[in-house]
Image (cartoon, rainbow, N blue to C red; front, side, top):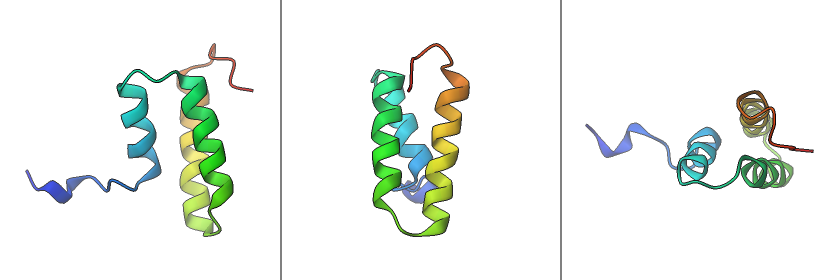
Length: 65
């Protein structure tokens, strides 16, 4: 398998990597929210929005707000 299969700057990959490493969903959510606030590109903001929705849906009891 090629090393370029995953984009290591992809927001979903970054968030999944943190969750897989055992970081709390709330912590990852807050980090993703802060990361989204830093980007100006509309496509990148949409990608971060998807990550935030994913975490909220997968971890409804995580007290994300």
